[in-house]
Length: 454
Image (cartoon, rainbow, N blue to C red; front, side, top):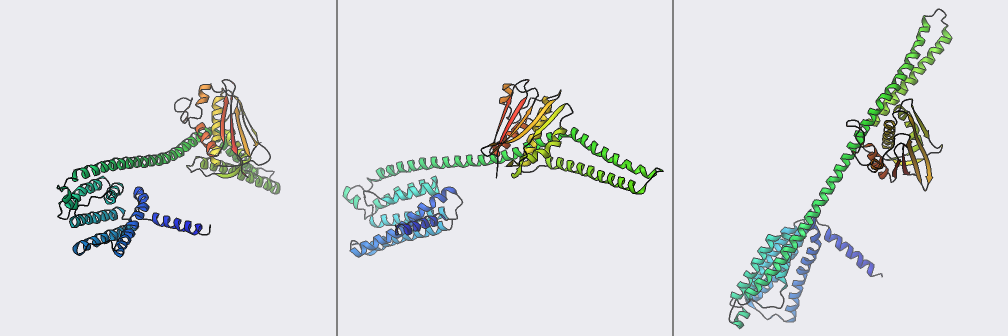
């Protein structure tokens, strides 16, 4: 075990080093480690193999042939090392192309010097074809294939061609070799083309998916903003009454100034009454400011920012705006627990959803009725908000499509069909659920379950 751990660590570092190349193309970046291993193997194995044969006395050639033999092996080894150096600098295709060119030139020199040697298996043509197809492309593959029969032909035409002397016909093996490597080149061409096409399709699909996700996020922001604008429009009439009450209170308090013109003016008590009137004016003005700020912040286009807050307090603060949506014929009831109910989501979206429920309930109760919001903890770390009305209700067909975006039963120009879709999306993003229960003439009941937080 003590030896395995350092070896495994060395292997991980080696793999990380091979992968750490400045290459942008994903295919080339994946091919880089295997190519470096192959090239490093050739750069080390060829000189060691030649040194072994020289030292063991297996090499009997002399003169020009020995120079060509040693020179081609050295050139291939150096070319392999240079190709690795170029790959480490991000020039993968250039390095591999230079290595293939050197390898082909060495093959020409060897065949001219030694003639064509019939072998059971020659790995170098296969290596050249495979690397050209996988790394550079179809054009390089067919250039290499065209050169391979040419190299064999030069060797067969060489005066040192051993097999040609035995058979009496120098080129008798050339058609068979050309056809065999043609089949190999065709298989490589079709296989690599299929793999690259599959990769291109996967990349296009990934790009389309990213674009769709970005567009979906933009659509969601527009949808939320449109729904906020519609809700603000529903609130306008009720808010105008509230502002009228604020202004009426201010006008009523300012009437205290007329006491200064009366004959029974008493400075000390009248001054206290005027001070109280000024304090009432201030309180009324602050209420108007708070209401206007609430409307401005609610209608502003903002990104969703989930946060932890008390749902009971949030609904209590929203109650005045909810009541503004209804007239005196609708009873608005909120049942909130005394203990905090902490949840984690975007508070402005919860406000928007509750106002959407209220606006739909108002349209469903033109003759009056009851609108109720009840909040309670239901155990298992979840909170439940039940929104119910005594309106007209929904048919089963409408209920099945209630949460679909842009589906609405309102006349054209009176609804966007986004209110319940926004509620559904908010529930899903918060890790909760939203259900509807309704029947014609029996009102509607929405059940929103949300996870509580600590």
